[in-house]
Length: 218
Ligand code: DX5
Ligand code: ZN
Image: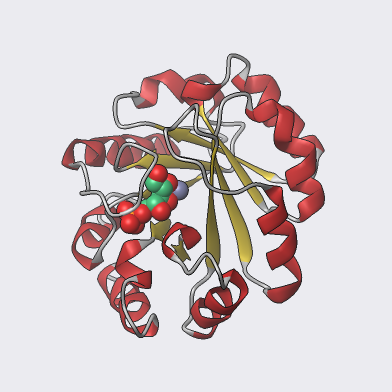
């Protein structure tokens, strides 16, 4: 199980400081939300932030690309030191080829699905990806509420992974994750938990990280 704090809710003036704080508090991954103002209305940051963080942490750098034309950015993020490169199903016309390109660049490949996208849409590539990110809010902003109807997609993926031959992906959730919602996800086979506001809106980041770890253990 992996706890992946999202630096979208961190101090934009002090990413390295906040990344050190979550690492000391026992986080496993750093979740990095890249937004382009097209695929989602918001704008955040690019590969420069990954490159700047890489020397400061041993944690896995989990990059979530909320951008149109993610193909254009594979090489720069690989060179910057990204570990996971997760693209949206809704943002590319050539998902299978893109996954191959991500792997060729030495990164793990993730595919994200928006709340309105069914698991069936990505079934043909489930044996090719390292991770499926089930969006539990509509992408674009931190601090939104968890959408309950996404839970059955976690269950479907969990079932597929158990039954299907050759499926080897992690299941990640992102958006509205708290100790309460994480517990529901854990019961449905989720491996990686992204949390932004739940962690960074607290003075002491170790309390929410501990609470999440407690909640997903059963
Ligand atoms: C939303 C981002 C999330 C965001 C989650 O588009 O992908 O990673 O940071 O924020 P919270 O945990 O506050 O919902
Ligand atoms: Zn994200």
